[in-house]
Length: 218
Image 1: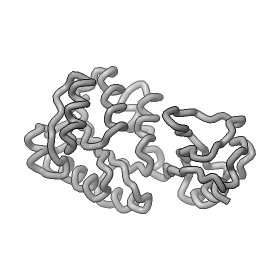
Image 2: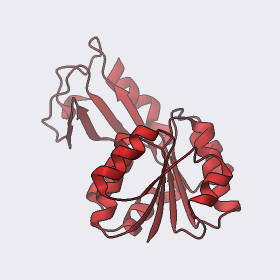
Image 3: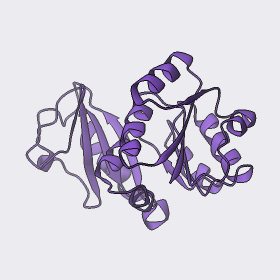
Image 4: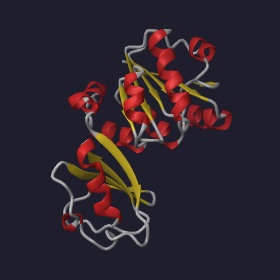
């Protein structure tokens, strides 16, 4: 498949490595010149320098008719612009973006973005577990996006510190899918103990989001 990766830093680095192993054709665009040079050197691919939210940059990178575009810039509005240009101007079949503000998930969906993810590293987590990019796209679109991916950094005073995952009062339709601890990524089991400064990636339904977050914080 022909896949465009627009923006991002470590998550883009991880995605590129994963997708190249699966022999996908990549178009990588980044507005950080030093990071472009890093990505190009590490992965031995061409990386386009420029702001991917600018239509002429997408045109110069020849993204037209790609299968998928993944927007990873830290700016929600820029990601929306990238996705809208990709679909309306360049006939890209599927657009995916990350957002910093979870409230933008529904809004961006209404504005034509196929998949909106509120936790940046979940893309990397899914790609690591997926056997093909087709499985990734299908997984992230289950039940018309009625799944929220929440990123919670555990404070030292949170009630969950020192508790096992199985001891949390989680609703039945919520789960901690991944823990980022320092430079390591853990897939937790029931006996996994939560530590201060852990970054938890919590998958919930919209209805269970508040209860799940409260079980971590309070």
